[in-house]
Amino acid sequence: MKHELMITAETRVTLGVSEANRLHRYAQAQAEMAACAGRNAVTAGLKLGKLLTELKAATHHGEWGEFFDKDDRLKPRFQSRIDEKPRPADTFFRPLHNFRDTCSRKL
Image (cartoon, rainbow, N blue to C red):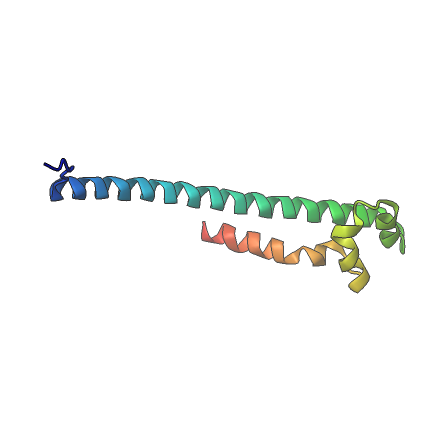
């Protein structure tokens, strides 16, 4: 005689609904964390833009590129943008400012 576990249709539905609710809660939590991470990334980008703008304003004409030459740790991140076309930090970070303004209007 075989001993098989019999799961009724009603039990399967109950288990399925329970799993669906669990997955829904998980998806909501992940979406909230992603939204928070996005806001944090925009905030960090805006702070970086402000800092770069202040640093550029504090340098004399022609010294901005030399500032990055002094610290090799900055070259991999910024050097290619600086070499392509020198431009002020506020222009470089304008898309982040526009994104922030768009997001704040939607809330």
